[in-house]
Amino acid sequence: VGFGIVDQSVLIYAGDAIDATLGVSLGLPTLGAAACGQIFSDTSGVLFGGTIEALALKLGLPLPGFTEAQQRLGIVKRVSTFGSVCGVIVGCLIGMCNLFVVDLHAAERAKRAEELKTIMKTVMEDGRKVLGCARATLWIVDEEKLELWSSIAHGENQILRIPSDEKSSIAGWVYHHRELANIPDVTKDPRWCGKLGEWRPESMICAPVIVKDKVVAVIQLLDKMDEVGNIVPFDNNDEKMMKMLAGHTRIFMDPDDN
Image 1 (tube, rainbow, N blue to C red):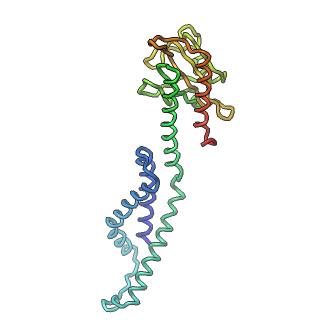
Image 2: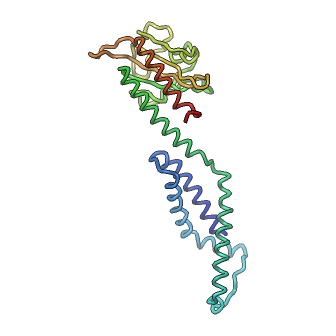
Image 3: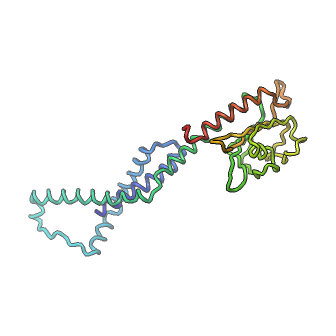
């Protein structure tokens, strides 16, 4: 019983930890994480087998007391094997109670978040290239902290955070008014809060991402360039493309569509 409890407990916790770390970063399937957990489980059985037996003796559990001749009897061997199998099964069933404690969906959520992050990077990068702009940012709405934070921000190595108040930034204004904003020159717009990180844009277009009648993100594209590299304003066609980009983003961010 003791061996079963230890074996199953180590398997569950080790497999869950591997699934939530290597499974997320390396794309290791859940079955692969369980196989790796089995390695730790078997290793612990070898390392702590003597400890479990010593603990049983300290608890005062009686030994069979068979003679050497009795131990060689077929009936004794069969009963011993049957008892060991039953003990391991009971121990494993008891060890499975750990499943009531472990968050069974944590690793799947982490994998889904990592997959969504990769998809959103691809969508934003393709959108930036199609519209021919220098940078793109996906602002995620954090209602608890009353801020917008950058899930994706080209050219930035850190997460940007700005207040979600409509007077603090153009992205904040788009979030509150739920409509697209096309600004030819942001320096002349009173809603402009200043530079984004180390970047000082000129032209900008922003659109809300609305899921179930709720703004969950804001897409922001900066500095559209012409064929020779000059910064130009975004036009009506760009606005249509921006709405399509927001629509695609909404599909990936809506859990009911995935």
